[in-house]
Length: 337
Image 1 (cartoon, one colour):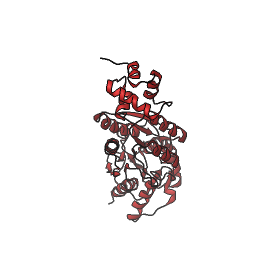
Image 2 (spheres, rainbow, N blue to C red):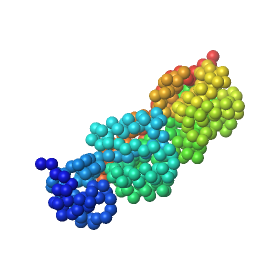
Image 3 (spheres, rainbow, N blue to C red):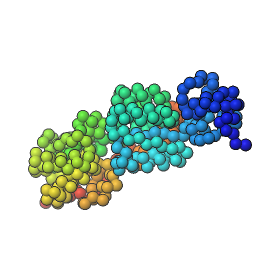
Image 4 (cartoon, rainbow, N blue to C red):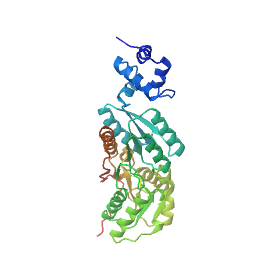
């Protein structure tokens, strides 16, 4: 027999309007009334939609993921890993594009609260006090991806940015380069900006090479445009450079495009290594040598960590993921005779 909302109301001895308010998460009823409605739904087997089923199980079988830029290749690779894990565990994913905007992020967190998601994945943004208070108020598990918080106790999945930047720079040294510049992100970005600068500097220091501030151009972000405008500025400051570490693939591709406009051949005149290993890196001309972050795997691991927290109610350990150099054709080896 198929029961209706009217049957639920009669069984619980409440009005149809009250059942509707409970089903839609609205206010205007007591906790005792809510329990009566949920018991009636369960006893009658009334299941109008996934939301009602979630009320009965106290789970929505959904999780929210917040990206600063959802359309980027960086985000799409992480999302692919998250969705693979979520679908395997019979859950759905609600994707939010925050545009790194504080008010929009808070609005999305409120929306996810209303959707009663079971957990949150927070990608590639700094956790502010406002964000943390809102996340804490939701009382659901949270895992960070490609970011971390020194101030707040939230588990994360990311690559060691300083170590990966060290590896990229050291690779250029191993290829025979000693005059190495850097196009960095924003140094005020404590997650991916300054650590990658520090890794670059540490590699030079350990190889006995001088650190010169004029060999570094700091950008506002990690975009193609930042790389395009950064290369001419860097070469004007340091015309003798033979190689550049760009702190993202987008920065590297912007620099390669700028070099083309300037008549500079990559890698014959100038070698460039990127950071991320986005799909577009192998489509570049020349194909981009880069440090790979396992973005899809990071998304999958983070989702699995989140499900562990949701199912077992315990905190999980953070994960530092491995990185590696993907050799293509944008770096030339300098051989000394």
